[in-house]
Length: 500
Image 1 (cartoon, rainbow, N blue to C red):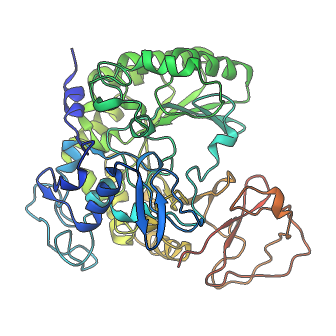
Image 2 (tube, helix red, strand yellow; image 1 turned 90 degrees about the vertical axis):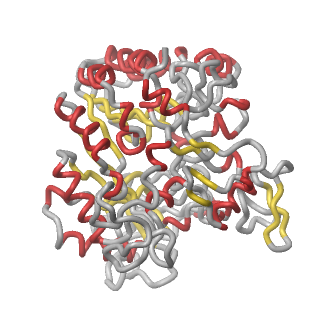
């Protein structure tokens, strides 16, 4: 029998397979013109869109000339939002809490109107309702911007840093975030048609009839069948099967330098307790001292999933940390805060990673309120991430100059305990670095010695230039329109575009 949270997940709002453009309401809220453009592209039967005089494939993400194109289908996450998270759309203005009577059209802290007015867009809606902006891919963007495939020795596993590995337990989420950087993987089982009419993970398994939010322990047989015929060592859509999990466990046994295991996806907590428990127990059996981190938006988008059974499972798997992603203070509802309390009261530490998103939280006042309220809920703000160069996400990214300015103002408003690390995951697999002058070699408006040389561009990944450090390079500073230069953990220099 399905649990209450599984029933709630099965009622999630999804785009129908046909005539999506005719679906003009989500949870009773009319879609805008830019939103209907995405649904029209996603439901186009022949997969072709026209951008000017250019024929553009919805599946490739580029036109024939290699210019910016329109994409839909497998190149972008599918559309799905829980009824709970949809209910937060068009809610109270910044500074208000759900249920306090401050609704759409009121002014936020920056003076802009919320959705329905002419100012700031609704931050919840912007994160979960796709728009036509997603259909444009810039030349600097990639479907796999962090080059995770390159660092994947086994299916469903990424080993980029020496002392920790990433395991992608499933490609499924309760809500598919429109700013997702792992869009080449997340939700692609559904987008590629592997789920038929029912969506991923239904009671009938992959390709069954249960829907994306159906019985979360379903889908095993289909995943294992897919694995049997696929020997490519790279993350692939679906949910990790028993054979792949055993291969990962043996890899961890052999690689004793690994001290931390990050479980992500997709969202691992959309799996039922049985299937999630099997994965946790096998990983824990490798070594008791392995630190496990679970990255999940479930407390944000489906707090009913944080049941007593799940909390007990996580508690018994210690040492284990949960890493959430709250991006706006409106997401901290009473239900969401209760789910956090259940976890923390059981001794499960919780961290938060926020993504800096244009139109959602690109304001120091919004971020200060978010981080202060997280601390009040005993959650440590961990990272504030600069947007990755994922295909179709340029409308969410801020220029680094602007992000640095927000962070400078933010430091004046919150304590050290409430201040996360502003960081960027370097394009091309360079790794995660703080956005500080120690790593940013050409800060805006400053003259520094960047210590890089021209390097062998032909030997570098497409879209990325890196080089061995050189002490003979001339002094430099960032100029508008030029790439930012970062020194990665490997000592090489990586470029991040200036998108002003």
